[in-house]
Length: 188
Length: 336
Image (cartoon, rainbow over all chains, first blue to last red; front, side, top):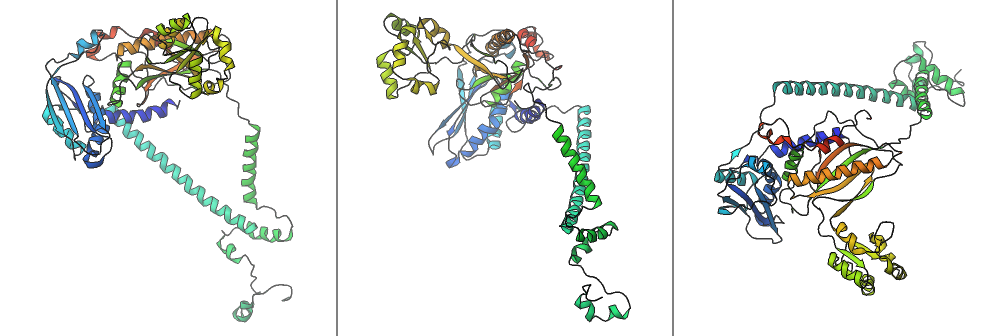
């Protein structure tokens, strides 16, 4: 297992990127499921859907843990790439769900669906349409408190100073090595 | 004088050097390098002396540097590294930890679009332990089984074979099964052998086929038994775990499990692991860290809580905290 410090630094960045960016939106409670369908290969305009799946869908899932997200991919080289939004009547109360111990997952019946065509489009573009059609609210990280901001600034400056010192030493070392080499050459 | 000292021809032709009445300039073959050197009084004399000795002595400055180097290298030689007896552990008391539901939420986000049955939650337990001591190895029956589709083969005949088939074995038989295995048809993950057929089985020499796959039944691993049907049910839902490099890893649940199911699994596993560790008497073994990961996601150090305490929405439900995990997870900061 790598050391916890290195693990945490890496993890912090990773988690920040799953919370923020395109795709970080909170869907209204009447959406029960989002289904993607596209090809494995990116030929014929299937690159955008794949990027959407890789980049935006984890963020969407993080902010909407109750919504099912199903991805079906085909081996074909051509064909449609669609995103289907399933609406249902019963908005699930998340608080209630935590309290009750459920034995079987509740299957919510879909009342209506909306399709978004993802062919030949960029992920941002697809996300815009999704937000527009579902009237979702975009998520933005609350700003950091002032103390943390100050600390970050201090740390950045400290790091800069340390680097400068390091480079200075390196330069001096290089000069010294050169001189030593010359002296050695004479004696040889 | 001219015969003993080499004089540059250019100097001889150039009248100015003689006109001035000065001694002719000596030109050494190392002129170019000499010009580049810093003007120190030590070096020229040294160069002259070195010309007469067969083993050139080092200049003063260089010698000092070399002596220092020698000193340090000698120190290194004398100061041998202590061999590490324990696997390295870290003090992670100040690093962020995650409640179970929080970690699960992140993991579900990273695993989005993956098959819910194939992707597994994966628990890694870091242990403070000696490198060459006994290792933990055991089998556990989790409250909700992770691998439900294990195919079991039973070598038995007569009544035992029928009983095994009822218990859930996929392939049952003796000679016809062995012939199939020889032909290369192996469609099972575990093998159990009834003790009365075992001698007959050993004569077939199937160890070459089954051995490399880890399927060979033996009494030591508990797969040669008098009544195969009895252990089949235990085997189907069981998962094995062992300590490697000071870490115990186990698949603790499928991705589709609810937080409650996963919590129960973790609790049972941690309880059993604590007992396993306590059973090894002569060696000090302690749990250092518990980390939850999954097939495609990063791992999260668990805090032992079920849900983050302090959030307004969760205060009501926060009463049920995983006590077991908290107790086991007491950080071993003192050791680090």
